[in-house]
Length: 214
Image 1: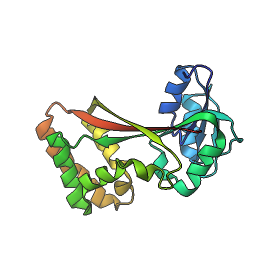
Image 2 (image 1 turned 180 degrees about the horizontal axis):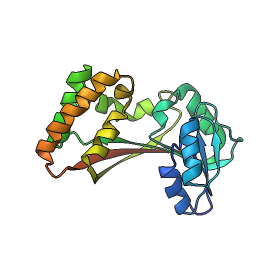
Image 3 (image 1 turned 90 degrees about the vertical axis):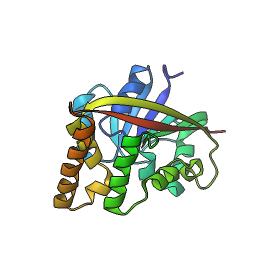
Image 4 (image 1 turned 30 degrees about the vertical axis):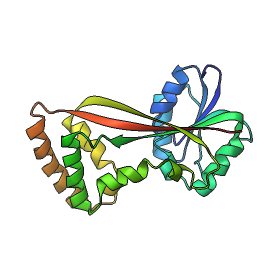
């Protein structure tokens, strides 16, 4: 039950998950390391408190949270530090929830798009997804016992939104701008053949892991 629960959303970004937790009645605090993200959060959610910090060194008191959430943020942490920090901040019986999106590679057009990305960067996209789905990698120390759920969801977005989301992935962020622009232009052509109305139906599998502190 979230009503009245003390929740900290770590790596809150612009506040997508934080706002949903707040809407469910949680007494939620956002924790965000990035200055730009935090500034956007404050503009969008002026009624929700936010502090600067990260999952490796939480600016929170011992046993102060009923729930810690990491919405697509756990992979930015060093688990040798973030696991002990989560256990420090959670009260006994409190919970840690981690979740992130992965592409639904059993859908052919998504698999083919993944193969194009893989060829471009020299990576094995299916293997990367399998690695991301390995529960034990969320806590290699084995201190946390996770319950796991997978949830499929989809959305219809303009092609430009889809390409902007693709271009925001870390492999593209470190790619030379000219090379990135060339790939995304070619990708636009591929996708317009599939979605001539310019609306892309994206499908994702969300991996959700929840662990309770003894």
